[in-house]
Image 1 (cartoon, one colour):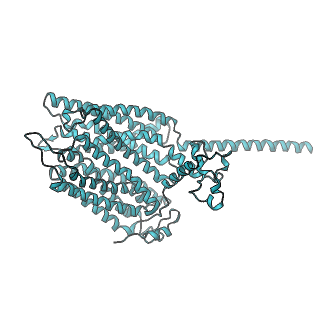
Image 2 (spheres, rainbow, N blue to C red):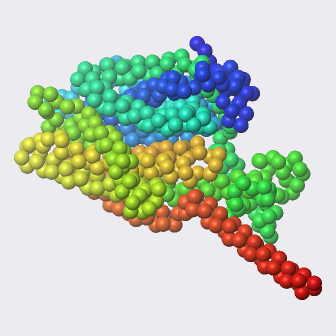
Length: 590
């Protein structure tokens, strides 16, 4: 097995220079390009098949086989997905600070393969499950903590591996193309399209083929195929080592943020300098100094400990104005970040309670019973459909109306996504009320296709919100912190899942379990959906306030350029007047 010489890569890759696995300058005819990118895409396809094949149908296993309460089952799924996205920050930090993207993806993909293998064992070994329910007494024994131990170990091992892959695989794939080469730069654009296609393709395969195997053949078979796919993905990734291009780890922007915050806190008792020009490297700053979050400026104060020349260069003693301003720019994204979380809380219901709804509905098409988890198919179809419609129709119409080349700004996209998420919860509440009333009063199961509208609406919302959030965090992040922006985006997904778990726990405690029951016919799930809809409206109003106050980085730069131009014009005018005056005086003397 061939592994990259990381030390050689570090020596040979200065300032982002690409090298091969031996640390030598790349030969474009032998490395990178579509062959290398295709092998990397295989790893992402494998990860998506594993994660979506598990998360979209796990709640039915927890409720049906392990006899856990619906609220606890939903929390297990959302905590798993929340942890997976949160660990993307760890994967990004390790790749930027030390390991590089290739080694990080290879290591974490191996961890993911181990996690799915453990999950296969946890769902196949009979002693890991409680006895079947007594149909006569209607009594079920829930799985014990010992039986759940292996399941939890498997899920969080997979979460660790998946998080490391998710935060690095797209960046490693784009490294295979040289943006300074017009032909390769065009290929890079197609790479991101195909990357999203692989995500969607893996998701569709997972919610159709794998979910069917899990429900009708056995969980062991369904998860076993996922494990085999992940192992194959790792083998393909490592097998293509000689074809890849590598970049040297440049250091994580998280380190800069932590350092500035630490120094600002340590120097909090110092007085501000009389003039900002006394701050460290003020005149060499690459970013204009601002008075926003002025407390952070103290990190750049040159105190007694930094008077020596060597100490003033030590970034753990004093920061630069550039570093401080970059941290300010990141912190300025937090208000918008906070209002993006609830969208993913709504989205998480699509693979928890909505799937549980399907188990209480008529899922038959002729003699074939569609697995409950396979109804997520309509979610991904909606996402693909609206992603295409947005680019070909919505954006073009918006360009004509707004005369803006973007058509819709990133925050406008997010806003539309938030509105659709509220509409999705309203549809979910109405359908659940109808389903429960017909089940209780008429002893009749309505068709599961009544769930299509809520899948469709929330899927359309993701097509707007996902693209808008990702574009916002990437565009608005300071230079040199683009990987940090991806981490911020992933953290909104993570927090959304965790907020869902928190809400479920609070609602269960406050209502004493009367809303969220394992038997949905005895619960009031529709009221939980209405609660999310109301929270969504409040969140949207807060988002409107924050977005109106936010000034895009491009606008700030434009304002700065306009001010510079005005100053230049004023100087030219002043100098011109002086020259005219001098000329007149010379003529007078003559």
